[in-house]
Length: 145
Image (cartoon, rainbow, N blue to C red; front, side):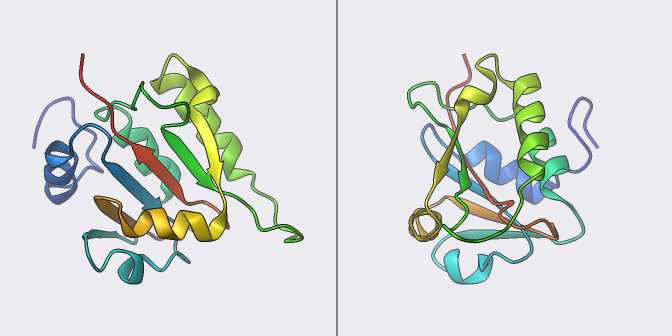
């Protein structure tokens, strides 16, 4: 155990977060995301018993968001015509406001299939048990100043 590190951050996840460099991307995937397919050329960390909000909050305590891009945090855009509501995005906005002085301005959206393509090149994908739809998040790592 370590002091000051959220307990949800496993040794495997901490190692990956530490290994990542500036501009590397991390996907926090909901339970419906094809994590093993998208991550077959990278690292997939299984965290099926956890939700995306608790992981996002813990990760942002140790993970700097990139300051050189407009949206270092991107959500999977809802498909046009899909009648899905995304209340979990409100939670994401609150979490990022606490973690980054730029607040919700850091959040962008990526079209669903473009998100999949970018996820294939991500450094790692965290597969969660999140049941909310369109709850996928892509974070781009910045530098520790």
